[in-house]
Length: 165
Image (cartoon, rainbow, N blue to C red; front, side, top):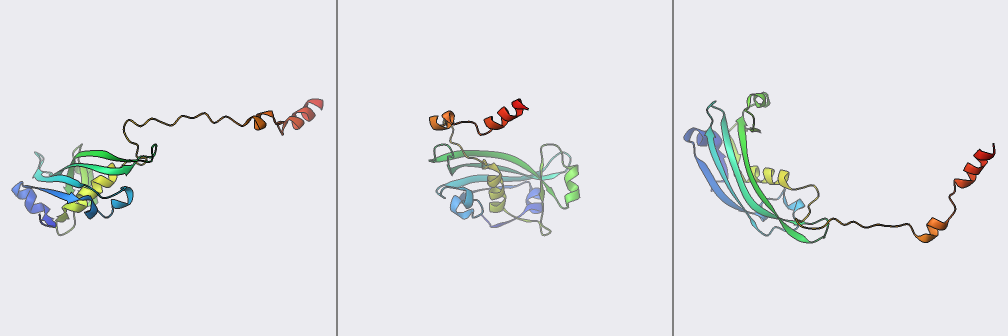
């Protein structure tokens, strides 16, 4: 698998690529992962639609090792992404994309790094607060200690003064 892909050439020839990346190779994603054990399977299919809009269809299948914020234990977060990215040359072209397309601003030379595309989508897929499926929400009633309940309300004196006037 080449590091750089000529997106415009792949669109013209209606080709795609498949690959497998170790999680340890995705350096920007490592900050949200508990560890880097595992792999990411992906495919990139380049084509243009009936409106002649060039796109890349990105498919990702992996499991990300995250720390559950309820149980504080490691769990594997399943990620399956199917995303169609409309290839645009300028930001103004984004408005012309059909519904269902996400814009991908192309570099001037038309060269893409598959690993960066995959990593960008995985970063977006990580939940803000990871919770293991099936973990129960912690619901605890934290009653005030009896000493606090028995203490006098500090505003009671003010209330009595107000009633006297």
